[in-house]
Image 1 (spheres, rainbow, N blue to C red):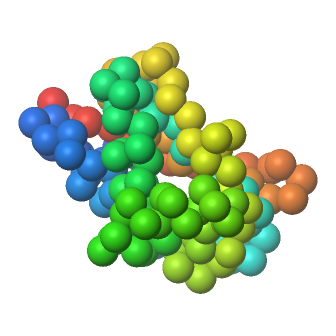
Image 2: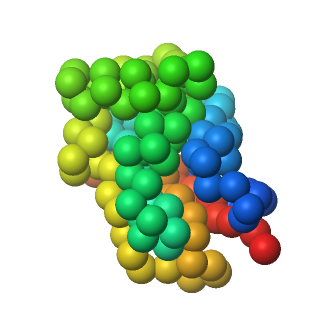
Length: 140
């Protein structure tokens, strides 16, 4: 069963330090971790839109998103480094899945339909079916 919905999460426009993207990723991981689909998850993809992509913040924002997806908020840079080296991450802190930062963490200069700046997170199963997808964006 595929779950596809878009959810608006208010993120503070004034600060693009990476904290807000971590909160969005953590919210996503928490919500997905509560579903019956966690055991069938094999891949997660993250798209950074607008300023998150255009400002060249891929490593900073990417690190905080990866840390949030793993509920590992204390050391985001280490979370990204480890995920890059192992090509794995622990989704919701519970399920180890494949993650290739070069392919699965994308900078997308195209705006989201409702705003320019945001993050889209998608989890798929072995058949490449979308199990859950959320878009989080900066609210003005």
